[in-house]
Image (cartoon, one colour):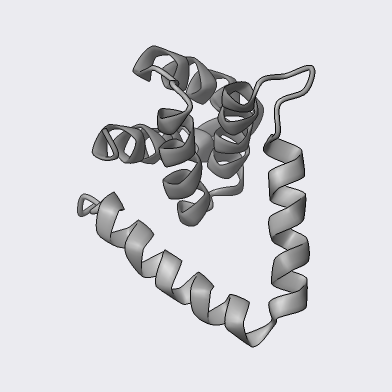
Length: 113
């Protein structure tokens, strides 16, 4: 498997998402509001919520989720060890496919440092 350039992948996905937001502005605004509310600190801090999102991205095998949530977790101060523990939980919940996507998530996290 060729190594993913997560920076280029994220930039390309951002461009595609911008086009989609322009095509459907009201649903996009609603989704952005949902994302902001879901990640806002509450009982759980935002970093923990981003790590949860990363784990879900692994089990859902969503490349875009890996790229965006690895970057967000990094910005919120997540460490490589925290990401590895997050991958372990995703592996427990998602089996073999999560092991493969866990490796991809770690690659994405390392690339955004």
